Image 1 (cartoon, rainbow, N blue to C red):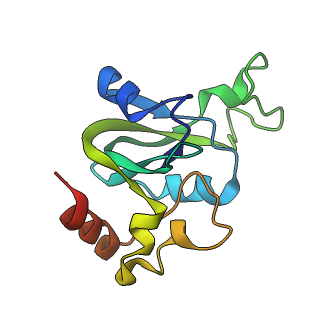
Image 2 (cartoon, rainbow, N blue to C red; image 1 turned 180 degrees about the vertical axis):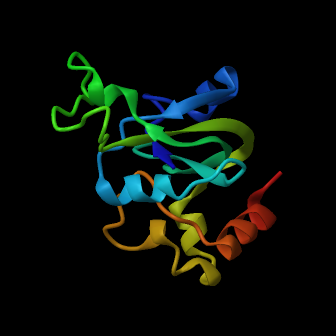
Image 3 (cartoon, rainbow, N blue to C red; image 1 turned 60 degrees about the horizontal axis):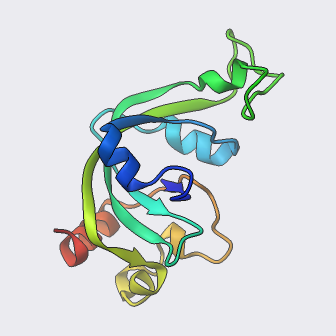
Length: 146
């Protein structure tokens, strides 16, 4: 799950404890969020940072629900085509789990041959929500986790 740290960071989540992951406006990323279940884990990734990379782990504490901002005409995530009966966009709630001692950069991930198929490493892969295979998750935790 990617977010720019100047918008919302792992430290913000640590302070808040949990937050809704709203504002996703890409159909494929939305569909990935629809697959998330309570108790699932995800990486928190700081994008457009120096360096960009994985900074921690979150737990999914609420599965997909209608993103409330799609219905608010004063909000930047408003979608005039969405209705309460047929919402287009979803949010999930994430809960802080762990912050890594250092950013796990793309260069760090590229250096591991077993991770070369990982979505975030694919050229042009820019989605804010991307799947991570269990083997990839476990390998990263084993290699870089606390």
